Image (cartoon, rainbow, N blue to C red; front, side, top):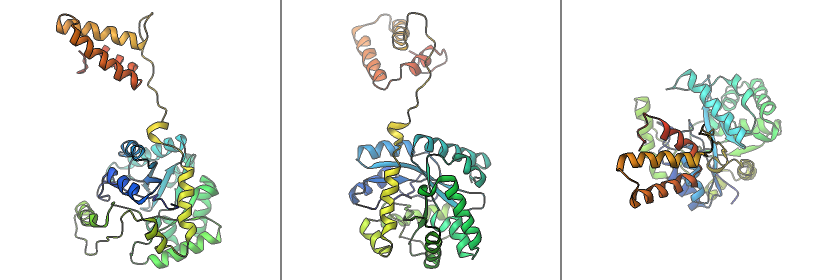
Length: 329
């Protein structure tokens, strides 16, 4: 398997995606994909997606589709933990402009490029819009800028073939631009749903978001197989193999590599967070139930084992000490 989808949206891309993350992952597993990138317009579903992917033996790639201030879009994929941090910061900056319609100032990209791979955004990318408008000098300058910020091995000119008007001319211009600058090509399907029949729901969601009717719904934005993509890009096999190349670079796994640890709480001398938590809970249980019965102690032991397994004594200890906490015994 050389092709993996690196541009896929779920329901979390409100008004655009029409499939749950688990549906996309199950389809990817069925198709034999070794990895799948979730590139929603936010990071709301990223952690859930990563956890589900690991359970299905599909390597999760954390990414996002960001809309820039001029309305164009780019796709960013996290290679490393630093890349994920930068992606998060960029989404935060975009949301500071408008929570309903986030927009990112392109000037923010250069300061938050470490650990990320950039896909040019396909039909919605600035590169595509510039070459179609005949503004080739600006397109060349923008591609050069991307490669300066992210590195020549982390910028890919994205091609899509979804049976949409103008895509032949757009792709030809993008291919010419990429070859002129020796930039790698990459094929994506910009998947909005996992199966062809889901296009009806996606059509309805888009119409509802924009409060309009759509006369020409597109049913090609589904998660395609390697065979289907190979047929579409028969003359550009490198655009498929490059998807595997990118997937191999994206080593960051949000489920296991985030590495975030909560700060240690202040506890009395002679205690650890674990032992102090147990003391607080036993005292509270005695107040509530009158005594530590065998049943109460058994339940506390079970909860302590669960807390220890997930390495959360510090956070639970802070909750137990808080007088207003609804979790207090």
